[in-house]
Length: 147
Image (cartoon, rainbow, N blue to C red; front, side, top):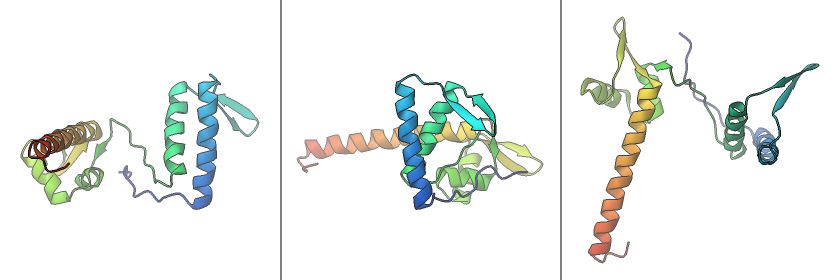
């Protein structure tokens, strides 16, 4: 099985600068309604608008020095890959699976987690954290704690 979630390396300073320049150029072209084309040898390929949007986001992140990984939404990840994506330990992830907080399937004796389920779980967790922080901030205001 091919590894879906590699530990991406941040771009070099030169690559980050090239990515930032390309991102700015794509942004200008997007606002002007330009069509995205790629030159491959002597052949020019037209690309869908959605590819342009994805490429812009990818280049913007790289231009800021961030490493980037692309994961298909239908992908099934191993428990270690899923734990890495959620930035939790593998034992903690397995506990989430066993408690039914995250669905999974078995391939032989190995658990697999759909990326779409992981992304939904992560979104819910972020929403919960934001709600709790808002409640704490409101309590601090009521108590005059200066937050």
